[in-house]
Length: 226
Image (cartoon, rainbow, N blue to C red; front, side, top):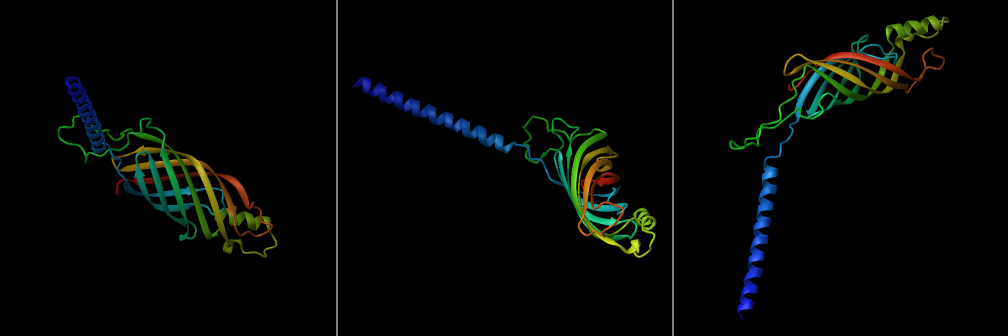
């Protein structure tokens, strides 16, 4: 009888220990979730000036961006310098390569006063190296002055007014950015990349090719957060 009681007490003790262990694990999980740092999403904006060999000349691009940690997504309109008209749009992605720890942002909102661990500080370095990519589309964009002049010199018959020719052009670009931080919010961006353009409509016999790889260079100012 006594052995049965001892056995029953042992089983009950084991159950209590299991329950206590499960409670400890659960509390630890809840605590980890509570203090898990959430990287905030910041809204930024900027203005870029760039050019490529797609025949359309220099373009301006005012844009808005969503920044989260080392990642930035951005999009905006394309304004042709020669015509001063909105001729298309661009969507791009940028990834910071110069911060190996990825500690670009932190969220202090979830931290208790008795939580002693220091928050991960935002990257304060003066220079940032980024990888970037973008896709863009130009609708009814005119030729740049140089491109129109080249076509005029090539086609001396004078049957086409190259200053009035409009092209629809798709372009994809990959490259690198060197960002110089002026302050907590303002960054000067300089970039270079390789792209491939394709003219959806095309005037047969043009000196310039319909599809070709080309070089993209540009500069701009980025402000985050706005």
